Length: 167
Image (cartoon, rainbow, N blue to C red; front, side, top):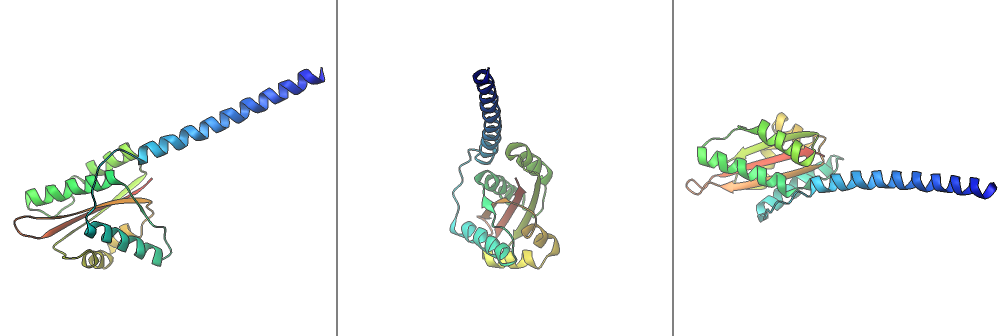
């Protein structure tokens, strides 16, 4: 009788343990799969510098560094190309970009900064930090980001799109 009771308790413990581990592993895999969306993006030295400057600033004010996600940089690049093609500087399509990032990556919130005609990432960052709305994104409750800096081949002017996400 004691042996049968012991086996029953042991069996319940094993089942409980397997179920809880299985659930955790499944959730972790889902999050990792969403974060690691297969997207190829080659960062220019300017883009890497801009990301470092943003993270350095965030850390200097006691915030977490943001992790880059290629998929978000691809979305940023798409917007830069749109602005160059249409000769505009705006947030057109932000709702669609945001909803796509939320759906694809499981983001909870998304923010976006754009800039135009700054020769260096430092100059663009300075402008963003001097603008309350842009600064709010830089110091916002985000965990990940992507960036694209593209130059208009006709005018030589640079377009910046920086998208932030909380995942």
